[in-house]
Length: 265
Image (cartoon, rainbow, N blue to C red; front, side, top):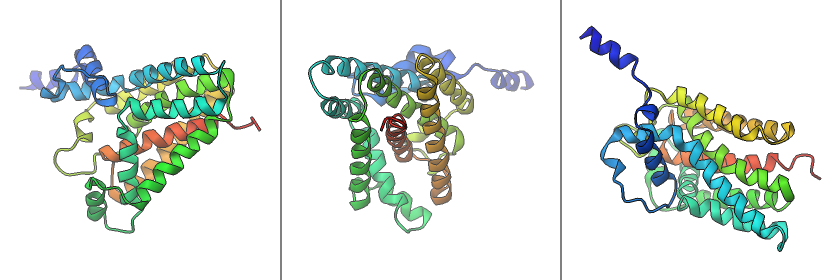
């Protein structure tokens, strides 16, 4: 028995033990890529997927950068901004926007913790949810339409990458708020905090190719958004849910885009 407990203690994180399964699980969950491999049959693959969230964010960002590069020579920045917003929302099947709407309906209501969680589980979107989606989309549009050239390309790469890193960081800061099983709980693992350090390292490694001011702006936007949103979620519901994780992704994307406009006026 002591030997078995020691083996469990020093086992490699799930991402290292199931790299391909974790990548495919992350790709299937975070995007609309039509994978038929049934990764959901084993919960270990979901926890292994968490380390791949930043990688999936980078792939989405690179796709957005290619799109922008094709549009820049022929259209104004406002057209590129709309195209990027559609791509970012469509890549996940509006999963994170749905989480933002549900989170806003619950967290912005003056209700008890249990009632907030019930509201967030309701599939119907209320006024607060609609307002939150409009504000976030307008914020992204206002920021992206004011950027040009290499700054715009850097921003569209950084946005989805930072958003997926924010999900990992929030999971490291907050426990799962709901009792029993839930969609968000599937990705929690003993190595979540270690994975959050990997997410920060990966974010820094990718952004290091940009100017120091841009890298600093992205990191400040990520840390500030995750910190304040996590404190708010802890005070309202005592932790995170799948909806709040989607919300922090959308909020971080918006804040990164807005941060990149600082000093451009």
